[in-house]
Length: 249
Image 1 (cartoon, helix red, strand yellow):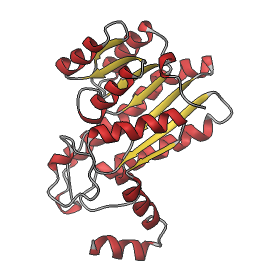
Image 2 (cartoon, rainbow, N blue to C red):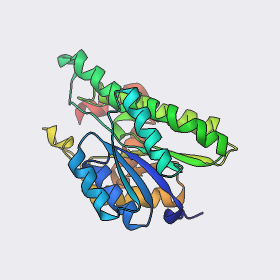
Image 3 (tube, one colour):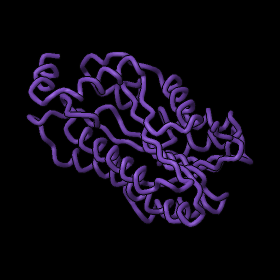
Image 4 (tube, helix red, strand yellow):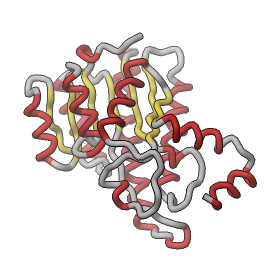
């Protein structure tokens, strides 16, 4: 069933830049009501000016549960939340040979625990109303081990696992779960990489893929397909074959 965006109130966490900002613009253009959250006031305020009657700018820090709880209360008071989309992300390219505990902890706190905190706040009301959607932005880095993905891949793999748990436990309810696994998207985060990034796409293309997937009600939204299907296929290989191919690449 096609999603009616005009009937949605989305709490989009991580809307200040990149995919989140592009996605917020698409949702506003589709007629949705949207609460945009992040740590940077100026870009969120710019989104609010696009449709002041339907967009609310709410600052929050996903690593601080009190801040996230306050943001949730503000969003919920605007209108009941029908979808929570968690897009906040932290990334530092890292090899196991250069293991940095502080960076690993920071990535886990933002990418995984921030999502856990957000789900903790929105889920009880959705369960009580038997209505809503939870969408989590993971990454192809969470499919299987990849070079220089120490910490980041770990956090995204756990996020994918959480989405699967939600999908299983909420089966039979009117609450939908979506896991969004992008390949390489041109953002401030991927600008940190100094290695070839095949099938790179823009944030606008990423937003198009996500909007289409959410509109269709897809659980697994991954893109671009010409890249993600290759990784999914490689992921089916036995360990020895997989490690051999990845190390050669």
